[in-house]
Length: 267
Image (cartoon, rainbow, N blue to C red; front, side, top):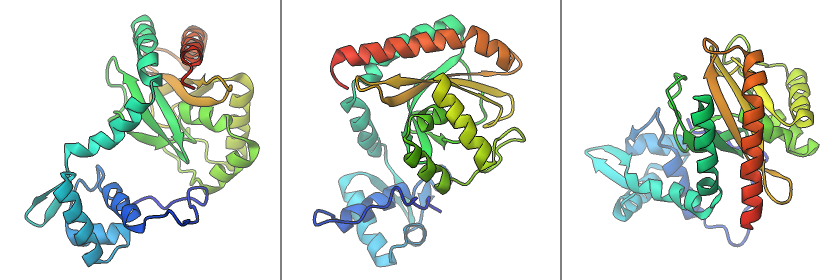
């Protein structure tokens, strides 16, 4: 099933609201790794549309090249990527940040990523890998829960108290591992600690064996516009050693990118 919007995501439609366009986006979002191919009936069930409504939208998307049809099955085409890359290409941060990330990855020999906050989740917008250390296959556009990821906590920490309370109230705290913080009061305390220290370390809360460090990338107004992380396996370095050896390099890289972004005048 598609994710239920949180109250912070729900907006009251105004005069400019185009319902058919919103329904078209809902149909596109109904496809996922769990449902890469769907029948018309399945799309209708996932989106809450009538079968006739789903049919009209699917055939419109097919005419525009965003959907392909194989018998009764509908699939997204690669053209849908244009929508995501329009976002990436419209923000020069990513091209400005990549050289600094590549330098960091060469230095520490571990993968690095940049993500932005989208309500209760983080979305990966840039990644420089070394080797795969997670069972989760991460690429551009991948999403992870904000509450148990290092980049998520960095970005949650930059919210106002009211915004943070809203997100936490809407978040189901699921134990991804035995280390995951699922107590709301404890999680809130941890996020406030991240706010105070300016970085986050998540030790095996998202996946066993994975430790991740993250720091904010700030625009000229001082707000965190994104977060950068380094992730590694505990077999190579303990959490305390990671904090001692990797954190200063990560913080330096985050500052370099923030300064470069500020000087670019784009943010």
